[in-house]
Each structure stands twice: as C-alpha cells, then as structure tokens.
Image 1 (cartoon, rainbow, N blue to C red):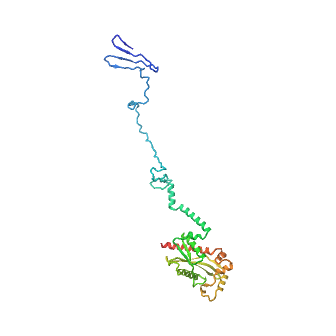
Image 2: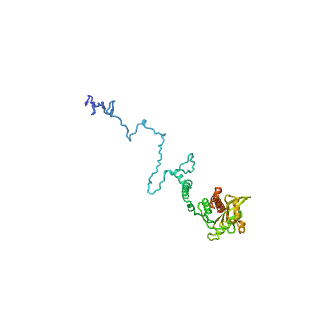
Image 3: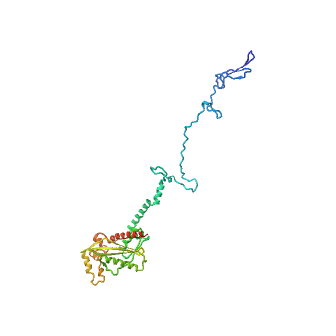
Length: 353
C-alpha cells in the first residue's frame, strides 16, 4: 500500500505476503531519496533468504578465490595394463594364427640379460621331433617289436625284413647252416644287408682239413670257386666258412671254424675264428684209420669228416653234434664269429671313406 507524507516525499511500503506454499516472506523496504540515487537495502529476512543455493555452479561462473581447488601434482598417472589376447579365429581368412604358447618363455633363474631362450611346449615337441631323440626312439622300438614278433612266428621272414641296403655278400656255400649266421650277423651290424649263398668246393684240400694251413687253403679255394663260376661280379665280397681240427697238445684235439672275407673292390681280406669244441682223440683215430693210405689229399687231412663220426656215435644230425657235446651249437659259434667279421669289415670300409 502506498502513502504520502506531509513533507512531499513518496514512501512505498510492502506488506508481508504469504507465498503460494504458505510460507511468510520478510518485509522488504525501499526508500527513494531524490538526488541521491536508488538504494535497495535488504533486511535479514529478505525475499531470497529462503531460496537454497544451487548444488553445482554453472561452468561460466567462477568460484570464489578461497574455494578454488589447487591442482594436485603428486597424483600418479593411471596405469593401464596391456591386454594380451590371441583370438582363436584369425581376423582375416587364411591368415596364419600364432598360438600364444609359441612365445619365448624365459627359463627359471634366467636374468634376462639379452640371451634368447627358446621355451614353450610347442618348441620342445618340435625339437624332440626334429632331433629324433625321443619320438624316433619310440618309433624304432615299436618297429623292432613288430619285427621281433614276425620273425618269432616265422623265422624265415628275417631275411626279407632286413634284406637290401648297400651291402651284398655272397657265402661260398649252399648250406643254410653256413649262410644263415652270416646273414644275421651282417644285417645286425649294417641294419640292412643282402646275403646269399652259392655252392663251392675246395679241390686240393681233404674233406676233413687238419691244421690252420689246410683251413686257410680250403677257404681260398672256395672263394676262387665262386669267382670263377660267373655268377658274381669281379668286386663282389665273398665269405668262406671252413671247419677243421687242430691238435693243441699231444692227444688234445679241437674242432673250430675259419671265416674269411675277401673284398677285391676295397682290397680287404679278413679272417676270424669260432670257439673251439673238444673232440675225443679216439674219434680222430677212427678218421685216420678210415682214410686210405693212397688218399691223394692225405697231406692236408682225412677223407672222413669228424662231423659224420660224431653224429654217428652220438646219434644226432651231423650239424648238431657241437650242441650235444658242449651245449653250444655250431650255428651259435658261426654267428659270433660272423659278428666279429662284420664289425671288422664295417670299420675297414668306414676308414676308407
């Protein structure tokens, strides 16, 4: 409501009003004096006293100087961990996918001083396969087990399983008791070897050689018989097997075998001997008595073999009398001597390469 005073000054007075929400606002007075400008003093109960301040100042209003936050310079930069992820499906079709395990893994206790360490399961498997150290041994043992089972069921299969290779040997005999141990020995030493037999005979030596001289001469004649047969080439290695008896002391007779290998291509000649088997002197006397006095080869031995006499007395086959007397067969004697001969031959050929 407006009133006029007697001094001619205008005075405005605002009476307290109630707001729409029922709250009472304080009175606000305003006096206007001429020539002095306008002054709007606010009392303690002004109109805006009940209005709460905004929770957050707008961006265009600067906060008071005393409320400005100082930048914190000691705050550490955020740490971001690099994501190591290898997708199972490659991003581009046909692109080569590198499995995570192929990365180099440092060994335990490695100081990481720049040395390249090849680690990882795949590298180990790859190295094992490439070097042939582990898997090759497993495969070789499996193959040997299968071969052993086959040869046990059918011993004749041994010749076919291990035949071939660069070694081709001819035995100067058509008897399996001589061919079989030589074949097994050379195949055991060289891995693969072809060993066959051809009939051969010593012409100037007695049927039962006596003494070392007669044995060497008989072996040479058997080798010569094979070479002149026209069934081998001129540089073909030939092995001759010749059993003979020798008197080591008075009345002490022994049977043993001589193995001779002749290789003219490498200019190699080798000799080995089997183990000895005792022969009773009475049997040697029988062989001497059964030999005619006019026997043309009497100087080299007897016309009757010790094997035939021992087999007759022991009632066994003539190739089995060694087993009956000493417990060691003739084949075992020949096999051991042939292994020695094959080893010597391998070393001799290897030294020339």
